[in-house]
Image: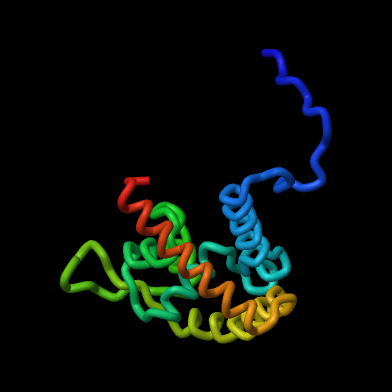
Length: 165
């Protein structure tokens, strides 16, 4: 199969020439990937969990016991990824299941003592790294970015529901 013609000039950055909607989407994705705690090889080596496991642990630490469906909805990850994360965390003894009397096939996921101790070790490092990553922004810029990201996230959720995307 023949290859497409080569571009005339090589771009220095992937975002060069992108329209703002594409640029925003791309940069948010890249920044999120770079900042994801479990995407750092040193964090994975030190704590033994990757991004999807950290998202589950972080979620239930913030909201309390939650079903897998709750976690999927809250962290906006696909069901398979969250299911694999829960299975791995359970296998490592970091989470357990609490019966859900309202829905027998949908138990609550919660931290074991071992899981709580791991979160207690990770959380200060997570906060320290988040601060390092965002210290380029002033306090007011950080608050404004939070406001804008919340606004964008809420809008994207609404559009996805309305448009069936």
